[in-house]
Image 1: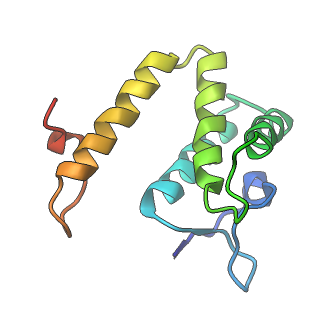
Image 2: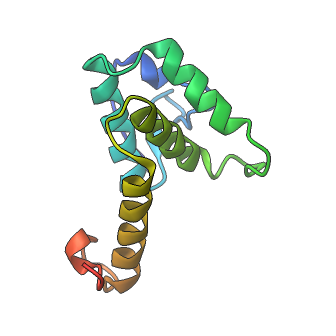
Length: 123
């Protein structure tokens, strides 16, 4: 897992996976990137701490979530996507299309190579 040192209040998000030292840890690079994007947008004033906590909590408490917390960052991305749609920054269809494109790119990328949208065979 990779580690991120940040002073953002988002680092206090509920159920955020942590190292023994209490620092946030991420299972994959995309999770760290989602965290960093969220911190950046929060610091830019797109949403308040309270709005973020409510959005994330709503996702974390939806039925069907993993009992072991392994889908924590899936919830994180869903919460961020919801805020982006609610604020008119992006629309749900665009976000869904990008998610599908990233998935196709990941599946088409040879092991050990960087995953980029250029690897999506449908792009």
